[in-house]
Image (tube, rainbow, N blue to C red; front, side):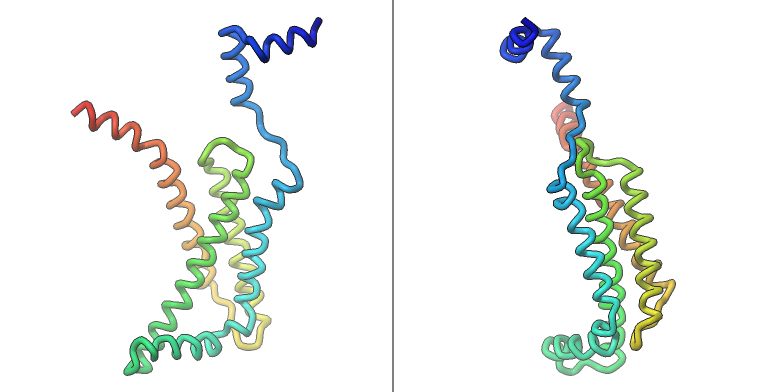
Length: 189
């Protein structure tokens, strides 16, 4: 008898029961599977490994400078030493900014992996904290390499990159709901 009632409710739900089912389904959180964990947490872990590799002597200023010099000389053959040094500096600092912006985005994506909402401050702050801590450890790691030096300023650039990515995500998540309201207001004018 109970099974028949459940079957009947699924096939022919009343209006009240449909509303209750929709509200319940809206509150149900999906259960995570090992595949889901891997799908969302592997990218930030792999990216952290890439960052760690970038912190080795293979990516020291001398090594990146020789490669960048070839690229810049191909585009601008008469580049002066002073101009090249400035370009090299900004490319390296831009790399710091970008790699931690990507890390913050990947961490945020992993933290929100099973939620239906687009934004929660807790996810953003946790992502920023993890990015900051990893940036600090990364700079500390560089003090042990032969041709690299750790710098608190690089950690600051890394953290600013992470914060910038999270601010952009916040704007995008709020903008995704805005066009409908703005469109309706535009039509009223």
